[in-house]
Image (cartoon, rainbow, N blue to C red; front, top):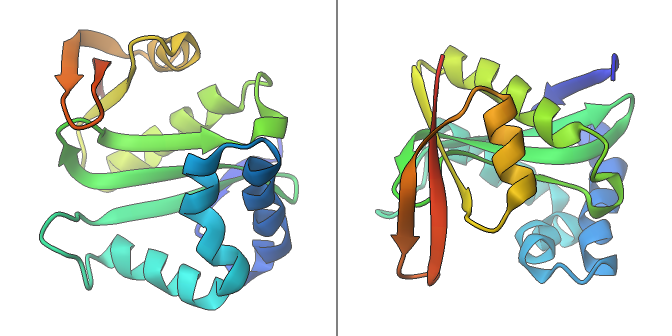
Length: 169
């Protein structure tokens, strides 16, 4: 994993990101496919919207500045991480996903490790993360990155219990 790095979304990785988005469609993971679908039909506008979000431009009242980065292994996008510049109650500061075809290879640990460096650069001293109480893989990734369990919370909107973690940078 020597050639692993985070990049801001760009035209340079367009083809790879389109493959990334389609991997969710092939795996019938609609939640993430719908999140990235726009990139397949209007890539330039999709990238422009991500840049605006990172700068806090054109946000609705319920939205917060969020910087998005792609995890690239050599030349392939294998993951996406979103760093929210302030904590969201049931989502925390960081959310990430790994391509269905690239899971169970250590990318989850690496994307969070690299995202923590970025969060520190944004001035976030204590990162809050959440994951579904049944998501043992995410719990292990967070704990391996020095996450301390703060407790279990309940998200009424999603009707799910979440583990809430803290990582001090």
